[in-house]
Image: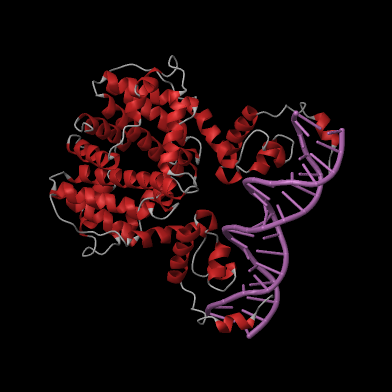
Length: 221
Length: 221
DNA sequence: ACCTGAACACCGTTCAAGT
DNA sequence: ACCTGAACACCGTTCAAGT
């Protein structure tokens, strides 16, 4: 209405709509401007069309985000080397990384059984590594479930720090101050262990080790 | 404008606004009509006022949800009996239950270091139990971190089934069909272990056992 | 058959103006 | 000082009407 056919012609020619191009555009907007900017209207505008046109290819915003999650998981390297435990840790860490890089996508993974092509590829590799570790079928199956849940949760947590206005250090410093001001009679342990609670270290790797060690020591009945 | 002062008088007299009454009203709406119905405007309407009035007591919708989460955690029984491991499992299960009962609140917990009064009470009890189990300070601190992450994730997952239109069994049946149709050459493990993947059993308790066993076998360095 | 303008029924949040 | 009507700047999704 303000600058119509001129700009259309000046630009590199309108790409035809497809599910794929919508998903890619969604990821670009999410990475560039964050979760709040990821609206159907914004995706449509970026593609030179109206929001209604998107609904030919995606059922709703959630469907789009699920597709974006699986596209992000295509980035996970499925092979690495070392012992089966090292490779499992690397795979889980890579999946966490891939999900946490895009704000809000981990939350999508938390509420659903994995069904995307790439999510299933990661799951298949995890199962192979767990079987290589000598686990029985049901324990391996339950383990992959737990690992996926942890990966999604760790990614969701990480994504919050990466994207929200607050830096990770600021959030920790604020929590530290809050804990320091707590009444010792009501919160004796937090007050007493405050230093340990904020001890630095590679918690992510430790968490994966806990999971693997725990799985090895806890057969599903 | 349609039925003004009459209804005001007919009703049980307007309660004065406060953070507390707003939080309680929010929980009622969330439980009755779900996350989508939990809007500032809806809370305001329930309290016979306009949305602007809420902002005297809550900073924004997210602030309200954080307060609602902590109110929900007040329901967690802090004491139980049995060995320290049994009590820790019971505490974690109760916290998961409390969070999963209210759609969307677990997601709030996933993105933030716990700072609410009741969240901190749960955390303090968990620390006490872990110390009773003989863990060193840093391992106990990292462990409580991991346990809280897991509790929030498990609650988020559970809440999806409890609230979304789809029943848990339907979602599982749909996933089962999807896995059954997968090409065996691309997904050999999923195809081969399909039966185990959908094996019934108390996964929630097994997961907590994995966490506890893993923590006991993985000291933080 | 495919696409989309326009509309429907909403949102969270702010702020000037009232009491 | 406290509260709020009205407005601002948006949303997701649908569907009748166009090509």
